[in-house]
Every structure is written in C-alpha cells, then in structure tokens.
Image 1 (cartoon, rainbow, N blue to C red):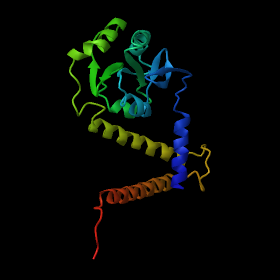
Image 2: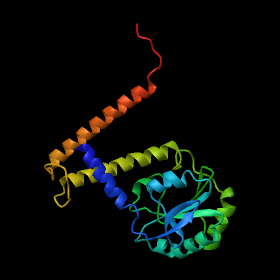
Image 3: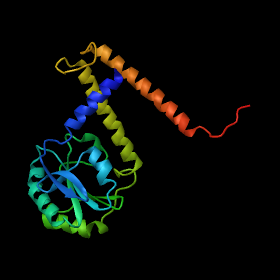
Image 4: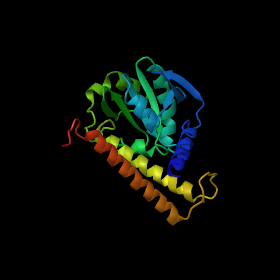
Length: 227
C-alpha cells in the first residue's frame, strides 16, 4: 500500500510539472519550458540541469502577486534575449517552489541571483535590462559570492532543500490519504486522520530501516573471513 501511495503521488507530481507553460526553447543543449524567452525553473530542473551546467545562469525568484516582479518581467525577458549566446536566464515561482527558494537567501520579491562556475552571487543593482546584462557579463566579478553555508550549491543548501521537499511530500500524502474527493485504488480510502498518521509513521519507520540496511551494506568491510 505504501508503494502504491508513493507511485500515485509521484505520478501526480510529474503531471503538474509543466506548470501550465506551453512554450519551450533549446537552452544550453536542453529543451526548457519557457515564458517570454525565460526558462521556468523548479527543484528538479535546478538540480539536474542548472546546478550541473557549464554555462552561467541568471535566475530571478518571483511571486505572481508581486507588482515589482511584473515590472521586472519585460526587462528580464529582454535580458534573456540579449544574453542568449552568453548566459542562460531563468525564473522561479517562489510561491510554488518553496523548497528551492529555501536554498537561496531570498528576502523579498523579486530577488535575482547569478550562478557561474559553482559560485552564486546576489544581484543588488538597478533592475534594468542594460544593468542585468552588464552584471551577467562582467559585473559579477566585482561582487562577493555567497558563502558555503548560504549557497544553494553547498551541502547546507542541498540538505535544506531535501528536508523541505520531504516535508511537502508528507503533507501531500496526508491530504491524499484523508481526502474523500481523491480517486484512489488504495483499499479503505479515505482514511481517518489517526489512520493516516499511523500509515505515514509506518512508512517513515520502514524507510528509515531500509536506509539503515543500505548504509550498513555500503560501508560494511569487504573480504572478511569469518572463522
């Protein structure tokens, strides 16, 4: 039942992954969903493509209701077109990608970061197309990179993102188990709140046990002769 629940949630996640965007573009050898030439970034896209990219990235964290973010959009799109052959440009909807946002020191909307050669810089300049382009090309060299504990590419940022993602997964699983409107193939669905908590707790114990067995196997000394 736990496996069935996991697969159902995973399928739901993938189905919602496009965020409703219909345009796409080839950026750094990968097809990205885009909006006005700006790549749409979520947690998976960031870890698989952005963090591993050999090119630099200029990324903005925005919110749909933010007036300053809406004002930035055409300027950011223009910067993306001007930087097309130099720097990749993307944006994150911070309201839906909270786990990814938590990895960055975002203190307001919009907040812009520049990533180059495993270093991350916060953009604090004027939000104009010309200044954004200048920063991406040369200006970042005069900026101070985020420390290892602040950087989303550092171990602290990665762990923080994983923990928050797990929290959202548990929250989504609880709602799925207790929601009578959800179509489900799990027997006895929907569950009471007590039963749902028990199922999630059991899943946590099983997952922890399997992780312990895996780690024990991974670090077990090899070639031991038992007499």
